[in-house]
Amino acid sequence: MAISKEQVNYTANLARIELTEDELNILSRHLDDIIKFIDKLKDIDIKEVAPCSHVIPIRNVFREDKAHKSLDVKDALQNAPAKENNFFKVPKVIE
Amino acid sequence: MNEFQLTAGEIKKEDTGRERLTSSLLERINAVEDKIKAYVIKPAPAASAKKNSGLLGAIPVSIKDNICVKDEATTCASKILGGFKPPYDAEVISRLKESGAILWGKTNMDEFAFGSSTENSFYGATSNPHNLNYVPGGSSGGSAAAVAADETIISIGSDTGGSIRQPASFCGVVGLKPTYGRVSRYGLIAFASSLDQIGPITKNVEDSALTLNVISGYDPKDSTSADIAKPDFIKALGKDIKGLKAGLPKEYFTSGIDPQVKKSLDEAISVLKAKGVEFIPISLPHTEYAVAVYYIIATAEASSNLARFDGVQYGYRQINKEGIIGMYRATRGNGFGQEAKRRVILGTYVLSSGYYDAYYLRALKVRTLIKKDFDDAFKEIDCVITPTSPTAAFRKGEKIENPLSMYLSDIYTISANLAGIPAISIPCGFTKEGLPVGLQILARPFDEETLFKTAFSYEQATNWRKVKPKL
Image (tube, rainbow over all chains, first blue to last red; front, side, top):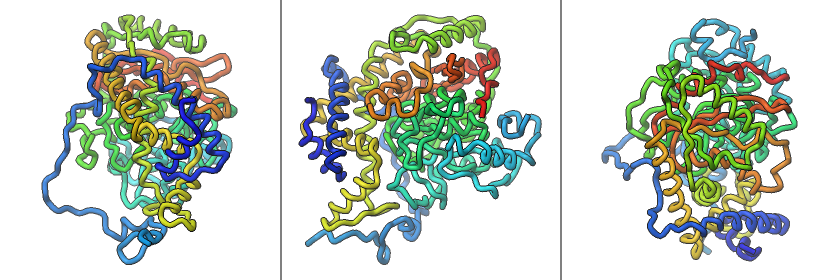
């Protein structure tokens, strides 16, 4: 086994995804297949190779420090399932 | 000839069919859409021409449903974005509107562009217009099917690992993935930000060049947008391809290729040889690792990009008794489909403590080697020619229970995204079952002109584009 059911369950929790028992079983089987497949990368010698983070030569992009028009608060909140005043509303975070 | 069959080039040149164009397309949609299901949101009958001037004046253009259109539902074919209406236009939408195009509905896709068959949609699967029992490819399957079935003139898709080219190949139309940085992604709902690129799906090569003229160009709102000169891509059409050097990578012509696809490719190569193209055998030695590299990098980036769908800012929310973490878990567990959950969890795993170096960092290094394969090859040649997909379209349901087999169907398209280079798929034949086969051309970064002149020359010498599905 390349990945155990317990590892899948742990990772699903890190990703904040609730799974049913059935989903966990099927997903564990699929992920095991996929991880066995991607393990083929372990055959390549990469000691001298630099990682590729961008395919085109780009650097950090800055803009001028000038105020410009952006989204209104009303527009930014228009899709929120719950809001109050100018804020997104979520269940209580601190007990 | 019905108006709905026209290309944008024909409509512009002849200045015909404009009055009846939208009504003709709506009649066509009424007649065939129940079978194809190309649209998540069908074009509104009121959608009509604003102006005939402009590069795409009064031309209907449908949009893949992962591109934001202000105040119009944008679902990404996911339950989790139910009810979401973007407060702004994507840059490509602003440019299309500026060009006079008519926005012609939102097309179906695999949820969040995760898939190669358009079966992973919350709104149901799309069918291949050439045979309704077969998939249209994916993830831009709705766009390719809408173009092939003449339900739109042009469609805009997105391509992260082949999501424009593979469905274009399966549906017998033209699909272009421009160079990374050529088209702004501002307003494209991100899947894998180092790979995603927006491009056109069209009935012919001329419309592809015309559409790229409209949607490409520097945009300060996308920090990966390339600030470089933009040629008039239409001018590449008709240019001589005599003496062009095309590479044939041996790794793409192995036992994995369907014999009927191989035969179509061999015939296409003969056509291009007659036009003066010189074919040179080449090697892209790291090709066999491309799918593995892709499914690490793409899922890692997806797990990060999809973190924003948490029940706070958009659409769907599910509350339970377990506070805010419970809300995140329930919202994402119920709001994402199976493939989205699989990819986000895989991406989280390859980035997680203890696995980052073994998977993610290693994949970035092998990506360097894959890109170097192309850099080296392009020292000797002008373009690479391959099949777009190892097979023609597969049957619905055939690969859905086996995700790895679905992932492997992207084997010929993924490398272009990893290397950031442009690539086009054009029709080059049919199997004996009547399913289209696609030819892929790849070129150096920002050399879409070589793609267009080669594809146009081949297209003009053949008649594949005239074979319409029997609907």
